[in-house]
Length: 439
Image (spheres, helix red, strand yellow):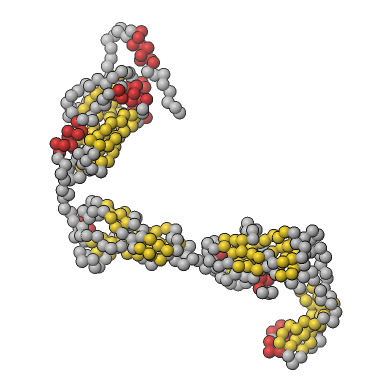
């Protein structure tokens, strides 16, 4: 505590400027104390000498709350002031303190500080919201009969992390034939990028004069006729909280051509493979089985790389309904499993009718060949499949079988009605000097 007669040296003679220079020797002043040592304020008299300005206390300060824990060593702040890093508070030492409370503050370059919402722990992870600020904390020591508080030092100005730097350049994959699609990798990067941007460029055949392709900003690029005779490269820019990287450029592709792809697949082989799967066969070929499995699964022996598309339709009262659809991609000459899934309309029709005429259309587009399409018709019934046509190219003018008038037996009526019984499963302001005045 400051007592009458105590002296404080305020300034050296060389620093007697500004506020103190405006006071005469012997002037009385009041002291607003901010040291949190139990003294609220005091009064004293200024005196000047050749070496210093001295304040002699004439009135002691108020003692404050005698139950407040006295501060023995001040709190301090540590950590690296980079976004994403964590700052830590050492609360210091306080006589008789039983616990500590914390609040965190961000101070701008004008010296104004605002409390950071919901920051009440002894540590704080910096975010982009604190970029350009200095961070400090207030530690409140709680004792049995009162509280006391003090400010930490301020951190350095918060900066973003270093921008990403490329470790391994991006690469391009894919064939360089017009119509094909090229794909780019990001490459590998240091400093934890959070996103990537791409720009494809068209270069001369020798790899010079590269120009950005308009609208080509995704990770893939479909080669167009304008690319024929050119080479292609891609630039990748990585971004993190620190900002954007310099562009990283891939190597260039081979010359883009419009050459027709060679193919060892014959049209006859494709046709034969399609004919083998035009109609469902086996135990799964009944109406009930197709309904139960929500479609039909078959094995297609692909003659080579290509795409298979299957469509089943029916015609009820001269209205064509898509009953089921399926598709699959073969990566070479091997067997693939294909699932033809019932549509909602197909499920409804199969539940409504005990017999349904289906037109099956199957196509396969192989690399280097025009699309080959085959079709046929069959009838799904309550028991087993009945093939209605053996001609693969004949159009399917389907209609539902109608029994002769008066021929509906009780057993057939039960079958018809029974098929319909299935149901589908259904900021207070403080000044920055508060954090720096004692550190």
